[in-house]
Length: 249
Image (tube, rainbow, N blue to C red; front, side, top):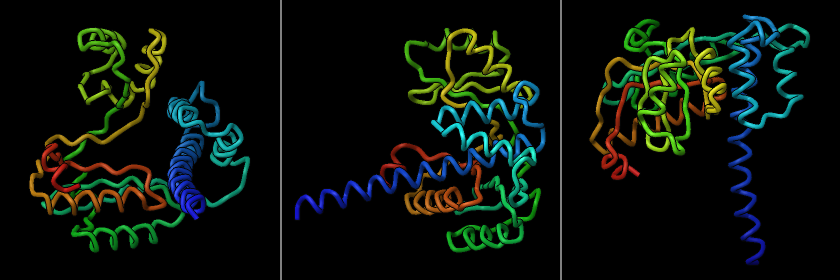
C-alpha cells in the first residue's frame, strides 16, 4: 500500500510537471506560428522568429514540434487560423491587467476572459482602458553567476541595451522593442547566454498591495488568466512586498 501511495504521488507530481510543460510548449508553438505567419519562415530574415526559436530551444522543445509550428505559420501545414488579441481589465485594488491572447475564436476568448475577471473580483475593460499605462519593451534575463552590477551594466550598454536591473538571482536587461534580438545576439558574442529574451509590457507606475486579502485575490486572478488555454502573457501593474506575499501564502 505504501508503494501504491508513493507511486500515486509520483504520478501526480509528474502529471503537474507534464501539464506545465504542455502549456509552455503550446505557448511557444503559437509564438513560432505567429512569427512565421507575419515575417516568413526564414529566421535569418525574421527577428521575431529567431527569438521564438531561441526560447523554444531553451525550453527543450522537440525539433519536429518546432518545425511543425513554423510550417503552420508559413501555410505549409493546414490548421485553424489564429490571431493575436489584447484584452484589458482591472483587478482587485484597481490594478491594471493586460492579457495577450492567441486564439482561433476571439469572441469565445473575450467571453471567457470576461467571466474570469468577473468571478475573481475584477472587471473586463474596453480596449485602450489600461494599455496606455504600459510601454512595450524588450527584456533579457541573465543568471547572475559571477557577474557583478558594474560588469553586466558595461556589457549590456555596450551591446545597445537601455538599462539593467537587479531581480534576485537574475539580471534583467531592458532594450527598445526593435533592439531585443540585436542586443541578445551581442551578449552571446560576449559569451553570455540569456535565460530568456522576449517583448514585454512594462507599467510606467505600479500599485503597491500590502493587504493580504487583496494580495490573495490578485494572485488568484493572475493565475486564472495565465492558465487560460489561449493566454500567451499576462502583464499587471501591482507590486507586493515580501511580507505581504508571505502573509498571503
